Length: 576
Image (cartoon, rainbow, N blue to C red):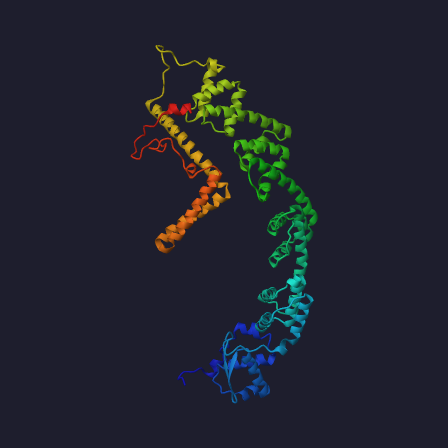
């Protein structure tokens, strides 16, 4: 005996811990007397008072034989171990303990349940194996769900799945409800009524969306969410009818869009969806002309189409503008800037927009021809505006070509061309044939007023431009070949796997040498697949690598030692 102990007063103020598993698993199955005996016995385990079975029975006002029956019941549940029946000695075990051999489930306890479950299965033409029936009884033994509540679940599954019903589905449904603390007949009935309501709703939505499968439990999340948003079912059906094809996820995005705009009724939804469908059609038409792929048009409707429609631009005008924007390399954002500028100038009517586009297309055609003389001219709105100003000032195309030829080596060709055209106008020159040629030998040459620093800077700029053209030509050809190759799914997959494999090989060489041969063999196979894909497109791996004109400097103008390369021949580039 220990020389230390608690006083009775101290013990009276202590607590008796009851495991939560006892409350959730066993209290629903046990009667009141059994719970009283278990709890008081648990309390006595921590007391010094001398108590025997007779004293406990008298205290709880139970017959002694009834007390022993109760402890026998808790022993079947593996919560206690009866060490002796006379005198009665009982040892308490943890709730999750499992001692001795598994105790058989008492058949009389589930006789009525088994009869009703078998009757349900017979109606469906289904027969569960003995081990499946045992799994169901074990579930009921280990969970606080009422037998009638479980039968309600099995009846629901039988009606829903028919001859395809299976034990796993019924148990999964029951486990899910137990996890939600729904154990009684009333709780399960309410839950299944909600499921039946949602099932009809989801089935109708599936029909409208062209989904040809049976609803799954994960599908019922959406009706719950929409109900919480306050959406009328008819409004949801209107959304599905508008979409015609899609998934519950895409439908959810549309329903959320309506809810965010405060639209919850069917009438308001139909009105909004009709307008939205018109705007979506505009977005898809514009996207097709801009060569932009769009999955969900919502963001484009909100950011662009609504504003364009409110400003008076119709679908035809916007499609015409989109064709022009594609030629200029614009996306939605720059097209929006163009629409803003036209609106500011009062150009919104279809005929006005068409006339503007025709003028711009003529300028683009002129610019394309000028770019053959001066490849530094960029196809931008600023360049087109400058061309429009020059044409408006009366400059002929031949004069513009002459200015472009002379601006080919300039670092800023557009201002240089403008300067030349202004000088020619002051000198009364109206045609390219009137431009004076270089002075003959013996006559005074035109003085170059540039300083030595400016001359050096221009020469450096010309040299940089020379090599930039060569490098861009080589790199552009390789990138174009790579772009073509990446459009092939076989090549794209092999290329991605090769990159992963090379990382895997590097790691294996450091930490797992045994796997190196396997990885290398896999990479060789992937390289062969990539070569075959390239050959099918009449390409080779060499085509994916830039081929520079000068192998010594790789068209940079400088050798590895930092000295200037001797490959600088600007006259050759001008002839190409």
